[in-house]
Image (cartoon, rainbow over the protein chains, first blue to last red):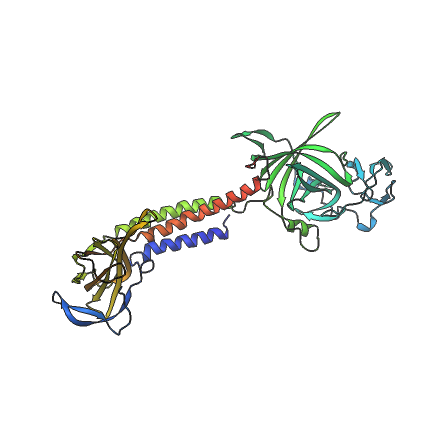
Amino acid sequence: MIRVRHVVYWVLSLGSLALLGLEAPNGALLTTTPDRGQVEKGTGTVRGAPIFIWAGGGYHGGK
Amino acid sequence: MTASSQTVVAAPQRPFRDEAQVETIACPSCGGPITRGAFGTVEKIVCPYCGSELSPSDSGALALLLEVRRQQRPSALPLHARGTLDGATWEVVGIVWREVTADGTTFPWQEFLLYNPYLGYRFLLFFVYDRHWAIGRPLDGAPEIGMFFSRKVAKFGGKRYRHFQTSLARVTYVEGEFPWQIRAGDQAVAHDYVAPPFGLSVEETHDENGADIAYTAMEHLEGDAVWKAFARSGRPPNPVGVGPLRPNRWKQGAGVTWVSCALLLVLWVAISIGYTASRDAVVVFEGRSAITEPLTQEIDLGPAGDVTAVSVEFSAQPLSNAWAYADVLLVPHDRDEAIGVGVEADEWHGVDGGESWTEGSSHNTVTIGGVPTGSYTLQITPQAGEGTSTTPPVGLTYAVVIRRDVVLARYIVLPLLVIILVPLLLWSFGLMVEAQRWKNSDYAPSS
């Protein structure tokens, strides 16, 4: 006999399987959320490459 | 034989006499009016008012067998109440109160003898101690009593009933009409077998003429169904606990649950294989430097137009009561929005109260998802310090490994947990209900 608990079970299971099949390659939901924003070139270089700093101020990581 | 030659007897529309035409006979002891319901099959009538035991004679008069002076007791259903169960009308023609005593505790119940002139007798049971209800009918045959894994069982009609308890049941109160001899004080050895919501009761009585064995098939009834059947006002008494016959709702549909579990596991294996096969965890950067030196390099996270998951593995050596941290910045070549993430490693140890302790790790991995593919400029800015200072330890180096298209085990484990844990949870709930049911049986853990 099909019961509400079976429907809930299938929805939860198929939902988590859909997460595995569709979202896992992107990995956006179950991973650390990174900082995102614009950067600008700061003064100085590292081995010839420019140093980037977050644009607009604010805190972006750092210990 | 043709259909037209068969004699069809239609079921009477009014199997009981009209209420207004009920004949009453006065109790020869107390004079109380006694209403007859079951007629020819009755062997004993117990006056509901004084408890005197009477015997119906052929003339319809009542002969006094035993004069008793006791008060009428209120039962869950009154004598002569009528109700409809399974599409048939039944009248309460007799009420018996019985009880068993186990471990010093008395467990009383009330039995209502139901009568329908075309269907015979049924027994409606109200277990006073836990307020559960059951309906019983005489068994058409005898069950086969045997053993199953050291547990006594009764088999009947293709169903196996597990022995629940054996007890000495005493009659404590009687009123109404009965097709057998009964009086307060009668005792019977009752063997109860259960296969919820069904049960079998085997009752043995012994007297000077020998032993008599009665088999009764039982089935759980909800109190609401009884209340509705007998048109009682208000609500039935709330049941307590599980009861011997109440269905275990966590076990209902268990087959569907486990078949679903098996199918979902097959689906999970297939999707997991497909997912891991599509991930190659390519190393896009691997670098090592002194902790004071930033690192920078162009990296490729794959053809543009997609998104991927990127892992950043960070380690610092030698790390002793110190911390190291790296700001990892990914600056895309074709967009404005950069991505940054911090990753820290720390290692602490000491001696406290004579016991040494360590915590932290010189390695750490952070995974970020939803990273657009394409070309990036990677910039790693390290920091380190000893204790609370920001002065890097001398000789400390750090290493960073960055991979794209990594396999994220958490996405594989999550559906597995859902698929496995839900049935296990339902199963354990079912076990808990059964444990509660059987704690009142002869097989309770303390018995």
